[in-house]
Length: 305
Image (cartoon, rainbow, N blue to C red; front, top):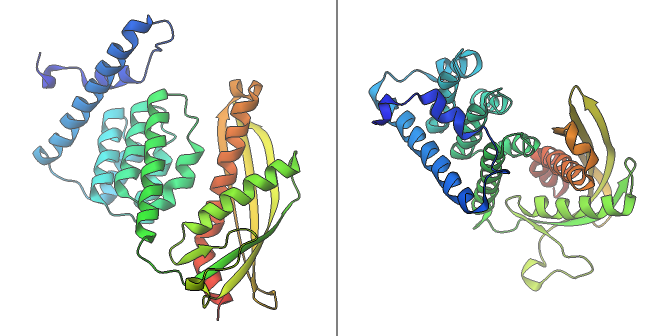
């Protein structure tokens, strides 16, 4: 049977339905490979069809993604928006909204498109959807987050350090297990500050190397002001808010503040799993810190004047 004779809706929707839990172990790999091959062929069919039809404008694609009555229309619109590589706020936000589409194939296509778009500002939204109900969507979301983080790091390579960040005390005013939370916030903060172009994070209890002796130092303290769990319908939500204060050295004068907030959603069924709740909490923390650090370059620059 030729691909164009297949029922594309059955083909794609079948990839995201059903479970392999009851499948004999010796057949699981075979079934998974068949699903992967079918998904790849379907994407090739859809992408190939782009050259055979009139190419709609970005606004038209966004409208199709938001209002398309058929999931195949929304799926194609998501893929096409990714291929435009035009990371405007409208394109990025439309794809982020599509991560909540009721059809798993559209959600996976939106995650894949955000990866192709290459805009690291989509990472917090992707993190919020790491617990998607579909294994295939979760896999694509994970791959997109990894790719965007690597691209972000690659973009920072070759940029010489212009400022040293010394991470100071992190106050925890919300949540339980304060010491564990503080260590988690410190760990993620160091990593994300270190990902910023031109920023070098000072290692704890170590002096600056000779090569960085002339760099200005900014002391950064923080406060986790909110970390709470709530219910929204059938979902459990962790919301987090963090604030950072920039201190000009050596006097430690306060010269700037930045803050960010985010939430991560999971299924109600996961509430009984401590491990799942910790993963959800971690996702909310990472997204909130990423949100705050969007304004970090300007704040650090102001602190070194």
